[in-house]
Image (tube, rainbow, N blue to C red):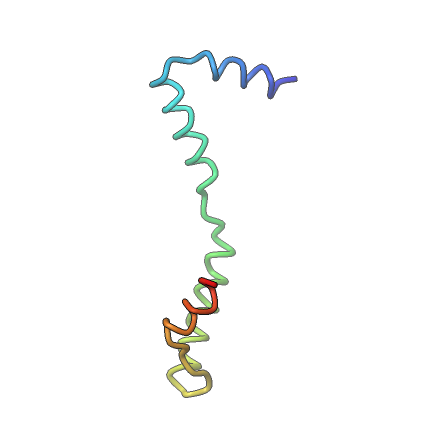
Length: 70
């Protein structure tokens, strides 16, 4: 019931107040998980190191775009 009450109150706000509420809600969803961030950094560094050592090869952008734009 609380969600419905909030929704009703939010819909009755002035336009500028709705904008501020939306901005706050979006910012609350945009928090970085530091553990995931560390894992991605470690993974990207490992992949870059493997590339520099010749253990993996790069894939041309055109090939990737072709696979995902079909």
